[in-house]
Length: 107
Image (tube, rainbow, N blue to C red):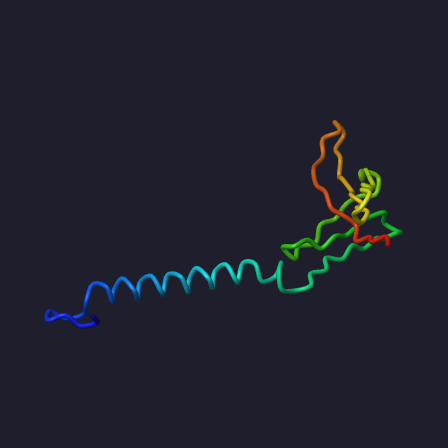
Protein backbone atom coordinates (compact mmCIF):
# COMPACT_ATOMS: atom_id res chain seq x y z
CA UNK A 1 0.00 0.00 0.00
CA UNK A 2 1.88 3.05 -1.26
CA UNK A 3 -0.74 5.77 -0.87
CA UNK A 4 -3.10 6.24 2.02
CA UNK A 5 -6.17 8.44 1.93
CA UNK A 6 -4.13 11.10 3.78
CA UNK A 7 -1.10 10.95 1.44
CA UNK A 8 2.02 8.77 1.35
CA UNK A 9 1.98 5.70 3.57
CA UNK A 10 4.28 5.47 6.58
CA UNK A 11 5.61 2.12 5.31
CA UNK A 12 6.72 3.72 2.06
CA UNK A 13 8.58 6.50 3.90
CA UNK A 14 10.33 3.97 6.15
CA UNK A 15 11.24 1.86 3.10
CA UNK A 16 12.76 4.86 1.30
CA UNK A 17 14.71 5.94 4.40
CA UNK A 18 16.09 2.45 5.03
CA UNK A 19 17.03 1.98 1.38
CA UNK A 20 18.83 5.31 1.16
CA UNK A 21 20.62 4.65 4.47
CA UNK A 22 21.82 1.26 3.28
CA UNK A 23 23.07 2.69 -0.04
CA UNK A 24 24.87 5.50 1.81
CA UNK A 25 26.47 3.02 4.20
CA UNK A 26 27.52 0.77 1.33
CA UNK A 27 29.04 3.76 -0.50
CA UNK A 28 31.01 4.89 2.57
CA UNK A 29 32.34 1.38 3.26
CA UNK A 30 33.26 0.89 -0.39
CA UNK A 31 35.14 4.19 -0.51
CA UNK A 32 37.01 3.47 2.72
CA UNK A 33 38.03 -0.06 1.77
CA UNK A 34 38.52 0.34 -1.97
CA UNK A 35 42.17 1.33 -1.69
CA UNK A 36 43.04 -1.57 0.58
CA UNK A 37 40.92 -4.28 -0.99
CA UNK A 38 40.58 -3.50 -4.68
CA UNK A 39 43.84 -1.82 -5.66
CA UNK A 40 47.48 -2.73 -5.60
CA UNK A 41 49.14 -0.44 -3.11
CA UNK A 42 52.86 0.00 -3.19
CA UNK A 43 54.53 2.31 -0.71
CA UNK A 44 58.14 2.67 -1.84
CA UNK A 45 61.19 2.89 0.38
CA UNK A 46 64.18 4.87 -0.86
CA UNK A 47 67.69 4.80 0.55
CA UNK A 48 70.01 7.80 0.22
CA UNK A 49 73.51 6.47 0.66
CA UNK A 50 75.23 9.87 0.62
CA UNK A 51 73.14 11.41 3.41
CA UNK A 52 72.49 8.23 5.36
CA UNK A 53 68.72 8.72 5.17
CA UNK A 54 65.78 6.41 4.46
CA UNK A 55 62.66 7.90 2.84
CA UNK A 56 59.39 6.01 3.25
CA UNK A 57 56.11 6.94 1.57
CA UNK A 58 53.34 5.89 3.94
CA UNK A 59 49.71 4.99 3.39
CA UNK A 60 48.70 8.62 3.90
CA UNK A 61 51.05 9.58 1.01
CA UNK A 62 53.36 11.53 3.29
CA UNK A 63 57.11 11.05 3.12
CA UNK A 64 58.80 10.13 6.39
CA UNK A 65 62.56 10.48 6.80
CA UNK A 66 64.66 8.18 9.00
CA UNK A 67 68.36 8.19 9.90
CA UNK A 68 70.25 4.97 9.31
CA UNK A 69 72.00 5.30 12.66
CA UNK A 70 68.78 5.23 14.66
CA UNK A 71 67.17 2.27 12.87
CA UNK A 72 66.98 -1.17 14.43
CA UNK A 73 66.29 -3.83 11.82
CA UNK A 74 64.72 -7.21 12.58
CA UNK A 75 63.73 -10.05 10.30
CA UNK A 76 60.74 -12.12 11.28
CA UNK A 77 60.66 -15.62 9.83
CA UNK A 78 57.67 -17.89 10.11
CA UNK A 79 57.60 -21.46 8.88
CA UNK A 80 54.79 -21.11 6.34
CA UNK A 81 54.70 -17.35 5.74
CA UNK A 82 56.76 -14.82 3.80
CA UNK A 83 59.59 -13.18 5.67
CA UNK A 84 59.05 -9.72 7.08
CA UNK A 85 61.83 -7.15 7.46
CA UNK A 86 60.84 -4.59 10.09
CA UNK A 87 62.67 -1.34 10.73
CA UNK A 88 62.14 0.57 13.99
CA UNK A 89 63.19 4.13 14.73
CA UNK A 90 64.50 3.99 18.31
CA UNK A 91 65.35 7.00 20.50
CA UNK A 92 68.19 7.25 23.04
CA UNK A 93 66.15 5.56 25.77
CA UNK A 94 65.37 2.53 23.58
CA UNK A 95 61.72 3.45 22.99
CA UNK A 96 60.34 2.75 19.52
CA UNK A 97 59.10 5.96 17.89
CA UNK A 98 58.07 4.84 14.38
CA UNK A 99 58.18 1.62 12.37
CA UNK A 100 58.00 0.53 8.75
CA UNK A 101 58.48 -2.71 6.83
CA UNK A 102 60.61 -3.33 3.80
CA UNK A 103 58.93 -4.91 0.78
CA UNK A 104 60.61 -8.29 0.70
CA UNK A 105 59.38 -11.65 -0.48
CA UNK A 106 61.27 -14.93 -0.31
CA UNK A 107 59.94 -17.91 -2.22
